[in-house]
Length: 553
Image 1: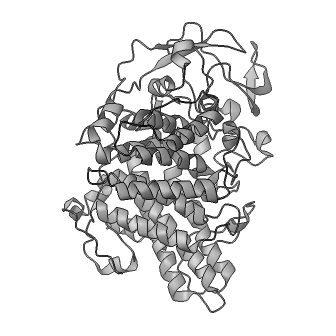
Image 2: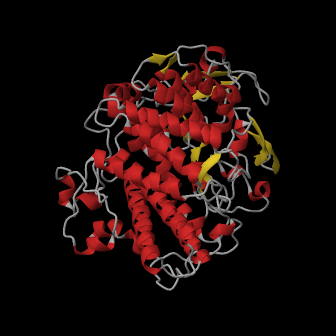
Image 3: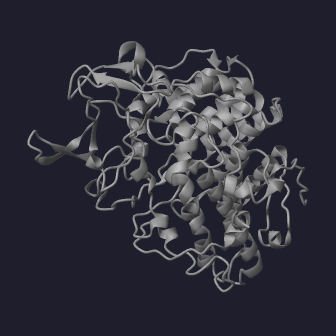
């Protein structure tokens, strides 16, 4: 049965690659993760966990991460493709749905297989610290995959040993509360057993786990429909610990977070590790999908109809009212006509079709155009020559963030607010203003409202695949609020025109009159994703009522 592949995904073979600049990724297992002869030294055990930072996440990161995380959430829209996600009509056969579901179970399966093999086969030369470190990495990744599973699909099976499921004719779904408890326990183990300083650049640390605990407790606080103050307090505690004790700091310039080479910078707490290599599985292919044109790419660039949504643009201070904004996050995330990006080379053509190159100046639409796009800038890094030769079609080296320090500041504020409409808490306001100060916008004066924090998150993390999960978190305790946000968004076409080129000082925005599919409809019946058809058809027990999970103490 096909569904068994997803739950037994730890048996997937992983191949060797070369030319990798990330040292800890240089020695993955040479045949499979179930080779009992591999786990004999510290180096081999650490090498066995390396694929958990990249290849196992591949299908999700490539397209599903932004299709679900941003198109479905409304920060970004696509004019022609992925309309099921844009219109909040993701179905059992939607590509993004099947890719995400498959990826999450592969991560769970790989993590479980590693846990079993390390416990079973680690030789006497493997130190106890390294053994615990590898187990912590595997449990951290398993928890991360489970957090995506439960937030997208609700009750799901908790599986700790994939091999045992070979003889189990049915796997029971477990309650949402049980899944979140399982996730929390995994992250707690990781926080207790990972070092404060990563053993290699790009490896997770104790602070990565504590950051995930802050996110987890904030989300758990609303599970069940009422606010759990104990969990909010824990979210605040972990967020502040990471802010004040981790040694991580915000990068002064927001745009630098996404200018190559930015990998594993001082703000990053956890990122997926990609490398320029001929091995497709270990390279960043998402860049090919979101780059708007081959004029700034390497024989790819298929995101020409991807754009900030009208709703997302409306969040940037002053943009619609004054025609411009001081919010530096806009330019680092989306492109408006006339925006300059010196770090990216652009191919241009004169009236005779002769090509030349210049720094990227995002083009303006024709004078009579009725639609245009504010295309994606975040994670778009340019031609091979812009990356020291480290790129080719569908082979990019830049990492993708999973957790940044900036989120800790906003988690703290969200935890203070809880289910309240506003707060006068001075530290919560201070932390939000730290984020706004870096963005170049004036501080808020208070009281701080839930919408203030929500909109800061939308601007700070747009096109990082997080927006949808903010809506799921809100939906736990205030479902109508989540529906109202989605149903009030304008996700339709528009045209952006600069007041002059190539150095505009303002822009005008107008909706495309003939475009009708401007809004989505969210309700209790379509908020969660359906189990992909290929799985639900072969596993009817996935429709059974969930049961609590029996935790071994």
